[in-house]
Amino acid sequence: MIIHETNLEKSNSIDPFESKIICGETLKTLQKIPGNSVSLIVTSPSYFLGKSYEKEQGFNEYLEDHKEILQECKRVLKNDGAIFWNVAQTIMDKEIFPLGSIFYNIFKQLDFHLKNWIIWKFGGGETPKTRLFGRYENVLWFVKDIDNYIFNIDEIRVPSKWITDKRCNENGKNPSDFWEIDERTNMNKITDIKRKLNDFRKQISIETDIYVNQIKMDEKIREIENIIDDLVHSKNNVLNKNLSNNIWYFNRVVNISKKEKIKHPITGETHPCPFPESLIKRIVKMASNKGDVVLDIFSGSGTLLKIAEELGRKWIGIDKELKYCEIAESRIKSLRKQSTLTRFLDVSIDNT
Ligand SMILES: C[S@@+](CC[C@H](N)C(=O)[O-])C[C@H]1O[C@@H](n2cnc3c(N)ncnc32)[C@H](O)[C@@H]1O
Image (cartoon, protein in one colour):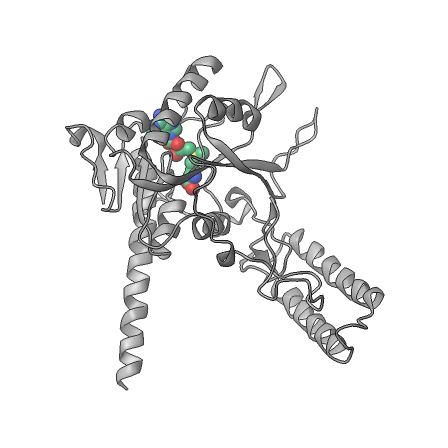
């Protein structure tokens, strides 16, 4: 599944419909992908923070390199294609530089169009002593053609707050551009929330559609929100479970327990900054269709690739570090093993 970029001799020699991880430099590899072949790029570049996988270079050179890469991204994207660019901020001489705004200017120079500037909020992380810690990142959604792009809103609706209000879409509302997703929960507290939600439902069902007592509803909701808040900040019993609530809180994978981290199959090494799966799932469902080609040009531990495989998309990942390509490969292999086993069990049950 892993191909070394140097083994791809001629230009445009990558078949985009064959899912694969390419171990190599992003720019050189991109140049070998045929134009107009990719529906969606979701990626996160390095943030110029001096991480081990970053090139030693000045900030202007870093930006120039990424501009060249983004130009190639535009070439490989189909006309209805989109790119989701995840960046936070960088720090130089104790000063903060907002990469979102800096890259926005580059995207505009390349004639991309911004559809949403999504804020991904999370908790945890370092606590700097001389400034506040920005506990959010930016996800900039750019399209090539402002009038023609994929937007599957029905795939990503979230529950409406006022379900009894007839003006609300019964299938849920459009998620806002402020994304909070938490995958951590605590079993006892979930049971408590379920009980309270049941009480809440009972209470609503005895009131008519029109005469819902909003004060009582607000009180109940606040009670539930408080428990959720407590739960989100609880350090114990961290489980990989999402709350089906309209408070979405995608925690950073680096903040979860060591046991849950995605590790290299042999060395046990982890990737320093994998995407949370729920964040990527929402983007892939929203901005691509089954059978489309999706690409991560800095694929690291392969989160996008795994989600794309799960959702029936073709995928390509590019990363220059072999150890990260191997982590990605092992994630895909275990996903494939799991789905073969599920299919086998389904057939066995059908035949009994
Ligand atoms: C922010 S991480 C991406 C993590 C990824 N989103 C995930 O879910 O694991 C950036 C990745 O880009 C890779 N990288 C940085 N510069 C690169 C370059 N010039 N060519 C190829 N890969 C590069 C690094 O090795 C690193 O794994």
